Amino acid sequence: MQWTRREFLMGCSAAIAAMAAARIGQLAFAEPAQPQATNEIFIQIFLRGGCDGLSLLCPYEDNYYRTARGSLALPTSGAHAPLRIEPYNPSFSMTAFGLNSRMPHLRDLYNSGHLAFIHACGLVDDTRSHFDAMDYIERGTPGNKTTNSGWLTRHLQTQGGATTLLPAVAASSATPASLLSYNGAVAVTSPKAFKVDTGWRYNRPQENYPFLNVLREMYNRSSINPLAQAGRRVTQVIDLMRALGDYTPASGITYPDNSFGNALKTVAQLIKADLGLQVATIDFGGWDTHEAQANSDGSGYLPDRLGILSQGLGAFYNDLSAYHSRLTIVVLSEFGRRLGRNQSNGTDHGHGNVMMVLGGNVNGRRIYGTWPGLHPDQLDKRQDLQITTDYRQVLSEILVRRLGNPKLGVVFPGLAAYNPLGIVRGPDLPPDLSANTTTLADTGYQVFVPVIQQCR
Image (cartoon, rainbow, N blue to C red):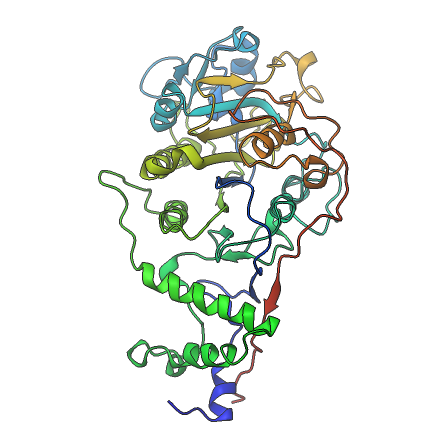
């Protein structure tokens, strides 16, 4: 097919990285560097909005909890009573703990030994701001949101750079702050939607996507030019994505029929495609429950949300049964909710919360950490669950024991010590707490196509 200069420029109506579901300014891939340290797959699921950990994993017989929560306290009997679990931790033996009644999938994963909880855990900074807390957590620098890279970026860089076509994926319309400044990260809502986003007349499948063919021909003209090398990787990934087609989960697996379920399916499909995926992030929003959090019988908005989370994690993990030995999933939120109920039958921004770790090498069926108690004198500012475990302590153990990365001082600048809780199995490499960033790998070249549109 012959293209004029005018036709080519008009076809460049968006950057090559633009997906059907969102516009993104770039798509870049790293040139091959050192081999990755492990073949592990790490998934971060971020519950944005401040999930109420005291409803997710509830001390439902604690008198201070029941008094402060009033009508929001989960019922101790009936269909909506918590699903009691054994914590196997003396620190949590003073009261009964249970999962929200809408979370039977998580109870099953817990009882099977694949899921662990860390309670009274979170960001040690005192902020109650959503945006500050998310920034601090994802950049890995509590109290400092000017850090120019995310913690997952620094992890991937200290591993020697990307050696695969698809080292990191955000199953959303944009990459999160945890992957900030990592040029090898791709934001994609689904493999089927991954394509060059340009005018229909230049992207016709019946003509074998002529615009992409022009790009492919252009980048193939040089074998050594860095821009051409990176450009070829772009077209290769687009070809691979297109070849994946529609996704069919394993037999008997049912994902939630919503954006969270779709994001989980996208990541599951990419893992099964064996494209070398090392890191994936998934966002699940809607957890800012200032009002109408739940009904007095334990039903309502938040329990429904927790049910979606439970169903999704259960489906995702069971769908990837062949990858359990390589898979580690972390679920976290920016902070928990206040112990007391507010006048709108909701809960306001709090402090301590619950983290979850799921995987084939997780020492599950245990609640980790130290329970601080809910007496007013034991609360942070006399109103919020205290934090007794820094979230970085959990992630550092996963970095060292599962991802084979001991460079904790680079990934989490300012981290004072490595104190594993025993949440996951794996070798304890000698931790390096120095903040030396000279070993960070180049994550590759960026590839742009100019945004040029016809004037009307």
